[in-house]
Amino acid sequence: MYLILPFFIQNKLLIYNSFLLPFLWRRNYGFISEVSFFIRKSKSTRDNIAAPE
Image (cartoon, rainbow, N blue to C red; front, side, top):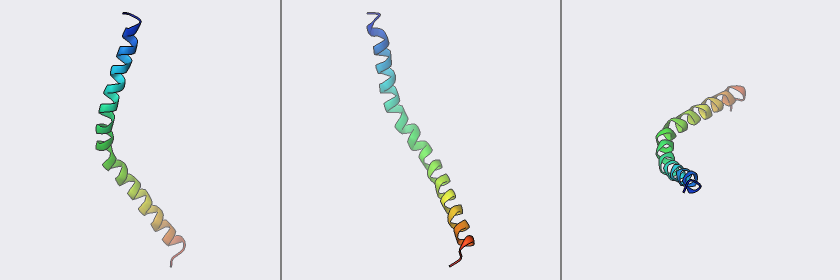
């Protein structure tokens, strides 16, 4: 019984993480995409200043 218990707890945590992580990721995804868009925009403007077409 005591040998199985740690595996059981670990399995529960694994299930908990697999259910919880997508929700957290989806909530943070908007922020991440905004930041990456801003970085890309600033990069493109820098390139335009360096080599105007």
